[in-house]
Length: 217
Image: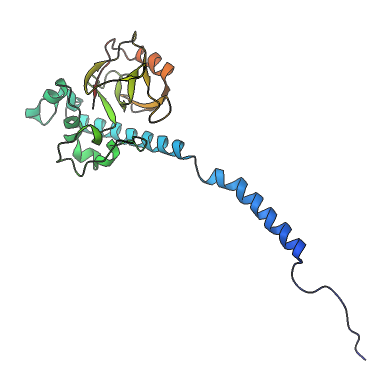
């Protein structure tokens, strides 16, 4: 005669299943923030990457033009000096179209008014360009500002398009609009620095140029 063995059925009980679900929920809650960067931070990282590519394009262009940037080379020699001296930034990037590859990198992801130009053949306007250009930047001055976030202001008064002097006695700061009173600046040495408004003003004192002229888009 066979003896029946009475035991628990295969599978989890309701209580055990609830415990497993609770543990999984806790793990997911812990892992998600690490796997998905905060959106503002992600935009700033993308902005840094844009400026690194832009800086590299300036250097590549200079290698083929006697170490000069487009702001110092005449239009007759395929530069943009005459446009730059009028305070117009777009042609400076336009002549570097081969190095830049796409106008998309000229728009900061956090620039709410920014719209990438369809191509470099278009007559770009302020909405197609999120970055200023250092008018007098040159290869021999590594700490000069080459390009950077254009949401600069004094107090709450934003700079208009054209040539602006960022003298060290002006209380220049970044606006709240893009990176929350902080911003990114690409230096001639190829680095991209993240500055608070205080650090921005300190950096302006060490560029080697008291005027620090930039072209605002």
